[in-house]
Image (cartoon, rainbow over all chains, first blue to last red):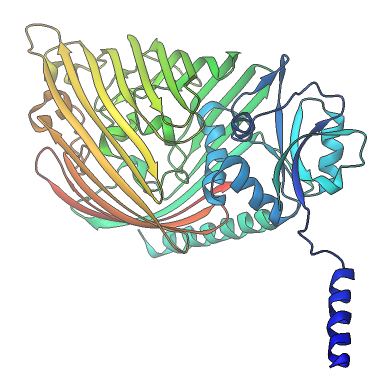
Length: 148
Length: 368
């Protein structure tokens, strides 16, 4: 019995000591350049922005950048920002160019390039994992889009 | 279609398909595109339709150019088939307030429920074919579609979620030649006289940024006839065409309904009496598992068979130029990123009670 108790305690200890699961405390955040004048953007404005409609703040026209650096971010973007399925959103942005000559949002597959692009342009808005920008002085977090 | 042509068609279609798929899989660091290209290839068969209509070319490409700088926009749509190539739209715009753009150039008149949504690109429309009343001018379309002048498009919020959309156009209407309209072209000469065209749309959007809408349509075109034969048929050298319509394009869950009804009034010079007819359609689409979409469309009309105006569009080639009634059904499979295969079957009836059955197979894609 003492041997069993020891094994249970050891097992619990190992569990407590092991690294957190990949998703624990993950946060997807909306980011802008630290030099940007962009204030808090409510969810309806963020949705309009990423659906290609015009969103201005302080006289600046905001530009959305799509983060497709990993599949989970894309999935969270579709569910929490635009509320559309992948195929519906794809058709929607294709329609933009046909209907009003609007350009589709620029897509980034590499998160470092995306973060550099956001840092360099005060009119740009995008979204990344919080852990990727939390210590980056060139980036400001505007809001949390999703957390686990 | 001869066997040689068919094999060439499918070779090209599959080569393009492979290119598109390869491009879609390529991992670019980032991408932004001023050009979009919508491609479609189709095979057509059937009975009672001895000669395919002009829009039934086996291949077409719709090249879209869109440039935006601050509030300025430049937009162009160039349509290419083996038989024709034309600058369908070319517009220069200025967005003077958010989501309100004033355009100058050649545009699609806003009183068409279908064409202002799908334009020339086949990939974005679920069905292979468009309803007969929405046909383009060079497909013996009964309603002028390409206007050259000024267009204003505006979208305003209504409450916290909904919105209103307004579009209004003013410009030069097409002239009428032997059996079809001839809109002003930006890349060639424009013989004949072109009258005034006015058109508009007022729509309610349940979601300001969504895709569903319902609204009212109106247009008024002053049309000058260029040929003696058409003048003799109508007893008039010109006529005014007024269109009053209503439409809905509504998505709920896996269903989408597209419906429109038009009342068309043809005002002729006296002593020729005025005439009118009605035309409408209802298309229902349902998304299924495995990226499949099934659809069906019903088209009907009233008084079209008695209209001398409608009879003008018969080019006496033996094919069905104008459809009085139609039943269409099909299945679309979005088998890869921005690529779809579709099969469609249609039964059509002409104003002279000529009946035809058509089937189509289509590959459509959007690049990039």
